[in-house]
Image (cartoon, rainbow, N blue to C red; front, side):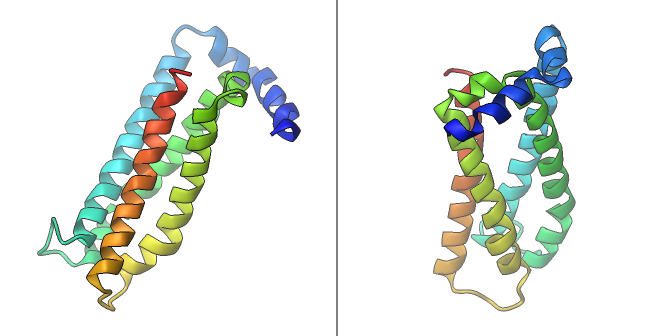
Length: 158
């Protein structure tokens, strides 16, 4: 992690980081948008995962549910990442010392990778996978995404 210290120091010293840090309103506004985007993303992922578990929207095919929620998932993620970068720049040195931040970033990378390499192909597949495979995929996806949320919340307490 020591090799990342210059990067964290640079982020902390950027004009954006200083502006957000020195403002009384910018951080709470950006954090609110960040949490709204996370809520949209988690809601869409949860509905997709519930469909994979046959626990909701059973009249809709899995690919139809995934296509319908795809834009919400994508835009939720994009807004969450953009606002997350802004929040990070405003407190990069705090994040450097924060174990929850490291966990959040690892969980985020794992969740994105899992969502786009495992969940998407499986939910869009017309081939019916075994129930064990679908359950494992949905549960893993849910745990990863909620892990991102929990670790993110823990950053504020560290």
